Length: 287
Ligand SMILES: N[C@H](CCC[C@H](N)C(=O)O)C(=O)O
Image (cartoon, rainbow, N blue to C red; front, top):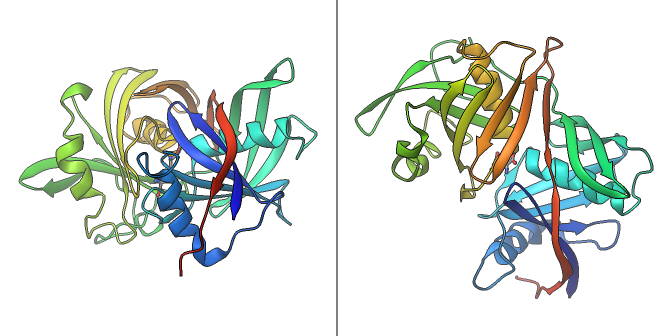
């Protein structure tokens, strides 16, 4: 079958988007489709697959599958691109609307340049900070803030934040020396995170600016991670580097995201969303 798609990215974190208002896909084929189209050599090339669909609880819905076929429960860069797509394809009529994810319902606000969506702000909701909600194994259900974390002989300190998906944040003096390649693939599968974890290294530049690199659960190193940037903003408040209610500029490999953990406890993410190409890809059902 030929499946219509749109390739979009948020700061270089690209996904292949399939509009379920136009086509229906078989549930059991989704992981295989995600692995197939993500492959840069034999597929289209992306960090995974995102489905835009109907919802009976929100204006539209989003599901995200990583490059390895695993389903993620949230995706910040994906949400901004879904919002852009939904507005530009008239799935919604307002510039503010809701998107249902496996982590709950978020509200997106699109910022226009003419009829074109340049930038999107998403209210990502309240971060989950209890150990059991990350989830992360350990002796108590309190928050995980700068907790000693020994891995491969390295004595690190981890701060754990969930944005509906799990994030382990480690602060470093120099982001360019972060052990992303060496420790990312190990920590992401560490048994202390029973559902796996997205691994972020962060260098604090000031009380309103951090540098950020990520090894994503299910996709490896990506140019950007929106939920990760939100988690880094929350973590930086918890560790006393940033004041709650103040906007933090998160410098990711692919560009900047602006994160605010508001006094209302909601996390706000603002950044670009861009369309690369659209077309169809052929899919032969895998048994
Ligand atoms: N790898 C993530 C999902 C994608 C998140 C990321 N691309 C973002 O922009 O938030 C997970 O399995 O939790």
